[in-house]
Structure formats: C-alpha cells, structure tokens
Length: 87
Image (tube, rainbow, N blue to C red; front, side, top):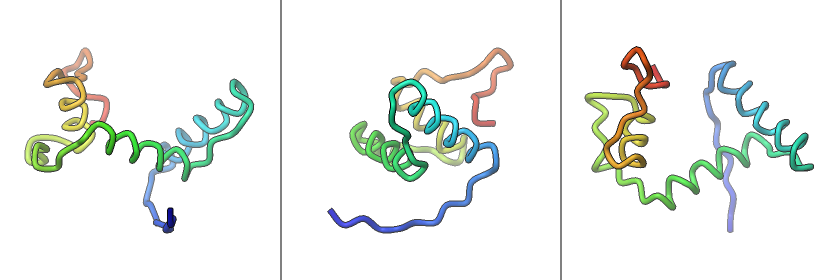
C-alpha cells in the first residue's frame, strides 16, 4: 500500500485532542498513536461504515452532524441546548 502525505489545517483544540488520544493510548495500552495514525483510522472507519456523500446534506448541517445522523440511523446527537457537539 502506497501512503501519501496530506496537509491538514486543524485548530489548536483539535491538535490537542489528537495528542491527548495518542498519549492516553501510551499510558493505558503501552503504545502511542500518532496524529497521522488516528486520522487514518478515522478515515478507515468512515470507509467501513459505507458513508455515502450523496446522503449527506451540508445545506442543513456540518459534515460531522450528518455523519452522526447516518451512523445513528437518523438519531441526532443533540445536547441539552439542542445543538450538536460540532457547533
């Protein structure tokens, strides 16, 4: 399998989250996950779930919200204030 490099533009909060995931795996499982490995695994998960871009309505929500709807079979992940975690 040929691996290609990609550049991402993430917020500081998103980078910190990826770093925490990586460090937590080191602490709890004994091996650290890199940012690249975490992102690659997330893409693999979306592929395994069979996410179909034709079923995603970006006019009415964020990509993550729409993917959650598909994963949850139409149930949203709304919080107490009626917003999803991605707003």
